[in-house]
Length: 227
Picture 1 (cartoon, rainbow, N blue to C red):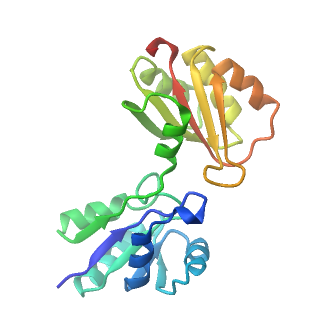
Picture 2: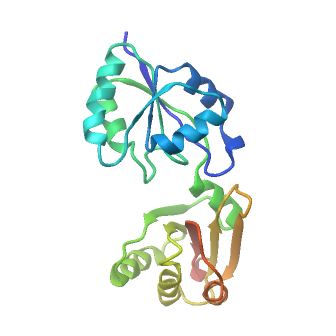
Protein backbone atom coordinates (compact mmCIF):
# COMPACT_ATOMS: atom_id res chain seq x y z
CA UNK A 1 0.00 0.00 0.00
CA UNK A 2 1.42 3.38 -1.01
CA UNK A 3 2.03 6.18 1.46
CA UNK A 4 0.60 9.70 1.53
CA UNK A 5 2.32 13.01 0.86
CA UNK A 6 1.11 15.83 3.13
CA UNK A 7 1.44 19.42 1.86
CA UNK A 8 1.83 21.40 5.09
CA UNK A 9 1.90 25.22 5.34
CA UNK A 10 4.23 26.69 7.95
CA UNK A 11 3.93 29.98 9.90
CA UNK A 12 4.74 33.16 7.99
CA UNK A 13 6.16 34.66 11.18
CA UNK A 14 4.67 33.72 14.53
CA UNK A 15 5.43 30.08 15.31
CA UNK A 16 2.18 29.74 17.28
CA UNK A 17 0.27 29.87 13.98
CA UNK A 18 1.18 26.28 13.14
CA UNK A 19 -1.81 23.95 13.48
CA UNK A 20 -2.13 20.98 15.83
CA UNK A 21 -2.77 18.68 12.89
CA UNK A 22 0.38 19.90 11.15
CA UNK A 23 2.49 19.19 14.23
CA UNK A 24 1.02 15.72 14.61
CA UNK A 25 1.72 14.77 11.00
CA UNK A 26 5.24 16.21 11.09
CA UNK A 27 5.95 14.02 14.12
CA UNK A 28 4.32 10.87 12.75
CA UNK A 29 5.49 10.89 9.11
CA UNK A 30 8.55 8.95 7.97
CA UNK A 31 10.28 11.83 6.16
CA UNK A 32 9.98 15.59 5.78
CA UNK A 33 10.86 17.31 2.51
CA UNK A 34 11.74 20.96 3.08
CA UNK A 35 12.86 23.93 1.04
CA UNK A 36 15.79 24.76 3.34
CA UNK A 37 16.78 22.14 5.93
CA UNK A 38 18.53 24.73 8.11
CA UNK A 39 15.49 26.98 8.40
CA UNK A 40 13.06 24.10 8.79
CA UNK A 41 15.22 22.58 11.52
CA UNK A 42 14.67 25.68 13.66
CA UNK A 43 10.89 25.30 13.40
CA UNK A 44 10.92 21.57 14.00
CA UNK A 45 13.36 21.78 16.90
CA UNK A 46 11.14 24.38 18.55
CA UNK A 47 8.35 21.80 18.69
CA UNK A 48 10.57 18.83 19.51
CA UNK A 49 10.20 17.15 16.12
CA UNK A 50 13.12 14.94 15.06
CA UNK A 51 11.78 13.38 11.84
CA UNK A 52 14.47 12.93 9.18
CA UNK A 53 14.72 15.78 6.66
CA UNK A 54 15.77 16.06 3.04
CA UNK A 55 15.81 19.10 0.76
CA UNK A 56 13.37 19.86 -2.03
CA UNK A 57 13.80 23.29 -3.57
CA UNK A 58 13.40 24.97 -6.95
CA UNK A 59 16.81 23.74 -8.18
CA UNK A 60 16.32 20.04 -7.42
CA UNK A 61 12.54 19.59 -7.56
CA UNK A 62 12.56 17.62 -10.83
CA UNK A 63 15.14 15.20 -9.45
CA UNK A 64 13.63 14.81 -5.98
CA UNK A 65 10.11 14.15 -7.30
CA UNK A 66 11.26 10.72 -8.50
CA UNK A 67 12.78 10.05 -5.08
CA UNK A 68 9.52 11.03 -3.34
CA UNK A 69 7.35 8.90 -5.60
CA UNK A 70 9.65 5.93 -4.99
CA UNK A 71 9.40 6.40 -1.21
CA UNK A 72 5.62 6.79 -1.36
CA UNK A 73 5.27 3.64 -3.48
CA UNK A 74 7.10 1.74 -0.73
CA UNK A 75 4.57 2.88 1.88
CA UNK A 76 6.38 5.86 3.41
CA UNK A 77 4.36 8.87 4.53
CA UNK A 78 6.08 12.15 3.69
CA UNK A 79 5.41 15.74 4.72
CA UNK A 80 6.44 18.68 2.53
CA UNK A 81 7.05 22.16 3.95
CA UNK A 82 8.63 25.37 2.66
CA UNK A 83 10.33 28.18 4.56
CA UNK A 84 7.07 30.02 5.24
CA UNK A 85 3.48 29.75 4.10
CA UNK A 86 1.83 27.37 1.66
CA UNK A 87 4.01 25.14 -0.57
CA UNK A 88 3.37 25.70 -4.27
CA UNK A 89 2.50 29.40 -3.93
CA UNK A 90 5.61 31.01 -5.44
CA UNK A 91 7.52 28.18 -3.76
CA UNK A 92 8.44 24.61 -4.78
CA UNK A 93 5.51 22.20 -4.94
CA UNK A 94 3.82 22.80 -8.28
CA UNK A 95 5.89 20.21 -10.14
CA UNK A 96 5.59 17.70 -7.33
CA UNK A 97 1.81 18.00 -7.01
CA UNK A 98 1.30 17.63 -10.75
CA UNK A 99 3.43 14.48 -10.85
CA UNK A 100 1.45 13.02 -7.95
CA UNK A 101 -1.81 13.69 -9.81
CA UNK A 102 -0.50 12.11 -13.03
CA UNK A 103 0.79 9.03 -11.21
CA UNK A 104 -2.36 8.74 -9.08
CA UNK A 105 -0.40 8.96 -5.83
CA UNK A 106 -2.20 10.01 -2.66
CA UNK A 107 -1.65 13.49 -1.22
CA UNK A 108 -3.43 15.86 1.15
CA UNK A 109 -3.15 19.64 1.41
CA UNK A 110 -3.53 21.02 4.92
CA UNK A 111 -4.92 24.53 5.46
CA UNK A 112 -2.79 27.13 7.18
CA UNK A 113 -0.90 30.40 7.09
CA UNK A 114 -0.59 32.35 3.85
CA UNK A 115 0.68 35.91 3.43
CA UNK A 116 -1.68 36.69 0.54
CA UNK A 117 -4.97 36.07 2.37
CA UNK A 118 -3.72 37.52 5.65
CA UNK A 119 -2.77 40.78 3.94
CA UNK A 120 -5.99 40.88 1.90
CA UNK A 121 -8.25 40.63 4.93
CA UNK A 122 -6.20 43.18 6.90
CA UNK A 123 -6.12 45.68 4.01
CA UNK A 124 -9.79 46.56 4.31
CA UNK A 125 -10.18 46.19 0.54
CA UNK A 126 -12.90 44.06 -1.10
CA UNK A 127 -12.15 40.36 -0.61
CA UNK A 128 -14.84 38.89 -2.85
CA UNK A 129 -12.87 39.44 -6.05
CA UNK A 130 -9.09 39.72 -6.17
CA UNK A 131 -6.12 38.80 -8.33
CA UNK A 132 -2.68 37.70 -7.15
CA UNK A 133 0.27 38.55 -9.42
CA UNK A 134 3.19 37.05 -7.49
CA UNK A 135 6.42 39.04 -7.90
CA UNK A 136 6.52 41.77 -10.51
CA UNK A 137 9.03 41.68 -13.36
CA UNK A 138 12.11 43.86 -12.93
CA UNK A 139 11.67 45.91 -16.10
CA UNK A 140 9.66 49.14 -15.87
CA UNK A 141 7.64 48.53 -19.04
CA UNK A 142 6.71 44.98 -18.05
CA UNK A 143 5.50 46.08 -14.62
CA UNK A 144 3.47 48.88 -16.20
CA UNK A 145 1.92 46.55 -18.78
CA UNK A 146 0.98 43.96 -16.14
CA UNK A 147 -0.66 46.55 -13.89
CA UNK A 148 -2.42 48.25 -16.78
CA UNK A 149 -3.97 44.93 -17.86
CA UNK A 150 -5.53 44.62 -14.39
CA UNK A 151 -6.43 48.29 -13.90
CA UNK A 152 -9.89 48.03 -15.51
CA UNK A 153 -10.93 44.93 -13.60
CA UNK A 154 -13.22 45.13 -10.60
CA UNK A 155 -10.64 43.39 -8.41
CA UNK A 156 -8.25 44.03 -5.55
CA UNK A 157 -4.75 43.57 -6.97
CA UNK A 158 -2.11 41.82 -4.84
CA UNK A 159 1.60 41.24 -5.45
CA UNK A 160 4.90 40.83 -3.60
CA UNK A 161 7.78 43.30 -3.77
CA UNK A 162 11.24 43.64 -2.24
CA UNK A 163 12.16 46.72 -0.16
CA UNK A 164 14.85 47.60 -2.72
CA UNK A 165 12.38 48.01 -5.59
CA UNK A 166 9.31 49.13 -3.68
CA UNK A 167 9.53 52.87 -4.34
CA UNK A 168 10.08 52.44 -8.08
CA UNK A 169 7.20 49.98 -8.31
CA UNK A 170 4.82 52.27 -6.41
CA UNK A 171 5.84 55.12 -8.73
CA UNK A 172 4.69 52.95 -11.63
CA UNK A 173 1.45 52.27 -9.75
CA UNK A 174 0.98 56.03 -9.56
CA UNK A 175 1.31 56.24 -13.37
CA UNK A 176 -1.19 53.44 -13.96
CA UNK A 177 -3.82 53.92 -11.26
CA UNK A 178 -3.53 57.60 -10.40
CA UNK A 179 -2.74 59.17 -7.06
CA UNK A 180 -6.17 58.72 -5.46
CA UNK A 181 -6.40 54.94 -5.80
CA UNK A 182 -6.14 53.08 -2.52
CA UNK A 183 -3.07 51.09 -1.57
CA UNK A 184 -1.98 49.02 1.40
CA UNK A 185 1.55 47.86 2.15
CA UNK A 186 1.90 44.91 4.53
CA UNK A 187 5.18 43.70 6.02
CA UNK A 188 6.46 41.55 8.88
CA UNK A 189 2.98 40.04 9.27
CA UNK A 190 2.37 38.12 12.52
CA UNK A 191 5.79 39.24 13.80
CA UNK A 192 6.76 41.79 16.46
CA UNK A 193 7.13 44.67 13.99
CA UNK A 194 4.05 43.89 11.88
CA UNK A 195 2.95 46.95 9.94
CA UNK A 196 0.13 47.89 7.56
CA UNK A 197 0.53 51.20 5.73
CA UNK A 198 -2.80 52.31 4.21
CA UNK A 199 -3.80 55.34 2.16
CA UNK A 200 -3.89 56.73 -1.36
CA UNK A 201 -0.99 55.94 -3.68
CA UNK A 202 0.18 59.57 -3.51
CA UNK A 203 0.12 59.55 0.30
CA UNK A 204 1.90 56.23 0.65
CA UNK A 205 4.57 57.16 -1.87
CA UNK A 206 5.51 60.19 0.22
CA UNK A 207 5.62 58.07 3.37
CA UNK A 208 7.91 55.37 1.99
CA UNK A 209 10.27 57.87 0.38
CA UNK A 210 11.13 59.05 3.89
CA UNK A 211 11.05 55.68 5.59
CA UNK A 212 13.61 52.92 6.14
CA UNK A 213 12.34 49.92 4.21
CA UNK A 214 13.10 46.35 5.17
CA UNK A 215 11.33 43.00 4.93
CA UNK A 216 9.38 41.62 2.00
CA UNK A 217 6.22 43.61 1.22
CA UNK A 218 2.77 42.50 0.18
CA UNK A 219 1.29 45.28 -1.96
CA UNK A 220 -2.48 45.61 -2.37
CA UNK A 221 -4.21 48.11 -4.65
CA UNK A 222 -7.87 48.96 -5.11
CA UNK A 223 -8.23 51.15 -8.25
CA UNK A 224 -10.27 54.34 -7.76
CA UNK A 225 -12.60 53.64 -10.72
CA UNK A 226 -13.83 50.50 -8.96
CA UNK A 227 -15.40 52.40 -6.07
